[in-house]
Image (tube, rainbow over all chains, first blue to last red; front, side, top):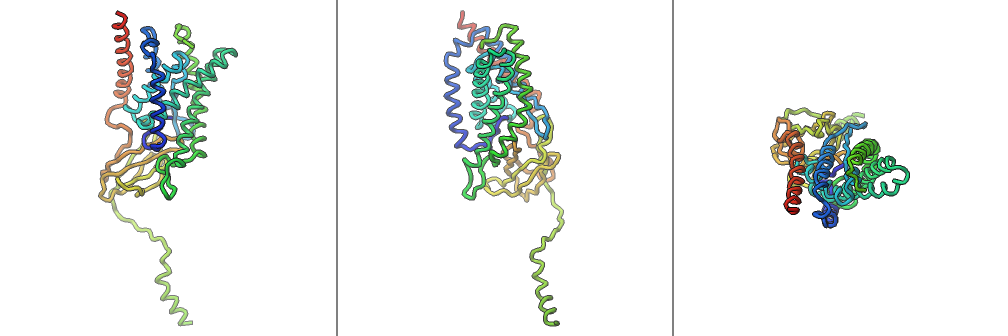
Length: 214
Length: 140
């Protein structure tokens, strides 16, 4: 789901970098106070998990492949701000080392996957917790992945409208919303089931160890 | 009747103007190979090949079942490849065409993947380790 370099117009990725920079500033405020000695090793472990998950490609029906994110578990254990910062670091590493996701697209990827993913996870968890924590975790993880996927699909699918030559040829990603939305969302319905199961498993472990903050 | 035949014979020369003539010629092609990181071929996906600096693609099409693109570089070494799938996977990067050779198109092809994995994990634990050290010193 990471958007690579060259697929987004500057009209898209430049403002996204601006918004992401503001969000990183917000998330990093008071970090030294919030990130104490007990939290650092835990955050390191789950950040490493998210990094590893993002690089394990699972073949999906239809010839495509996908991977879990690990954002939901970061958000449930550490809250939105730390999850967003940690996952942005994961995206940066994946882009620099593997070319999985672009540097120019980092702002969009971080906002769609890291910030929105974490916000939807925590919001839905809080909303649904009264119906049972396991249900809340599962639904929150599943839905947050779908919302992130939808944003990625919308951003990609809008590129032919945002930037094209005089003759109408798209300058960047050439496929419209009618193709990107189903192409991105349908595989993620399946990936979401895996993400939800994995989130629940890790969340239960974290809870047993007394790590959970939300 | 003879006149009509003569006219038709004269026109026959131009009557072939709309035919597509297919010829074969020996040429050395460059073959690009596109794969996902897990080795799965980037098969049947759309691509465009541009000579560097050109806005008009010299070749467009779809990769084959093995994720390959064969093209004749016509002496040009520097090209730009754009390839994409419907779900937003793909590449947009410069390619150096070497005739007769298979060029693997991976984001970073030189370093073995396990080394990159470990480098990433090292960066994560190293960074958080430094933060932990900083917190420890601050406490003292």
